[in-house]
Image (cartoon, rainbow, N blue to C red; front, side):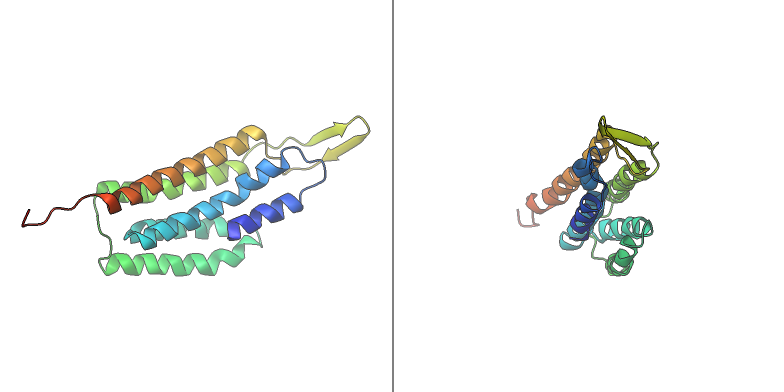
Length: 175
């Protein structure tokens, strides 16, 4: 929910006439929501390693602005729950694939978000011949699409990965 709130804050707070304002707002806010979904999936589907790595990544991303720092206690609580779950043996499957995907998926979201922060900003634009605007927070369509694509890919892989484990047929000793 906080990620969707960030989308609204970014979109409503952008300068009038800012090019690509809607897509840029989605590209900035959805990585927060994606990490929340990853942590939720990790907690609900017996993968505390995914919960711990997603919440640790969320904690890093929360330190960007004063608005997002409010999410830091949530990230810390989710991280603690993930670590406690790992210590209690709640991880259903623990192999190199699990550890790799639990690390790569949140890292992909972090890289997508980092790309938006560490890009070269165009300094100005003209919506018409009489108006001139200048800002340093322009996110181009290409940057937005790359970020949203990485977030979508991470969410899609995580849904297939965590959903596939629930539908596998398990054999018993009597079979």
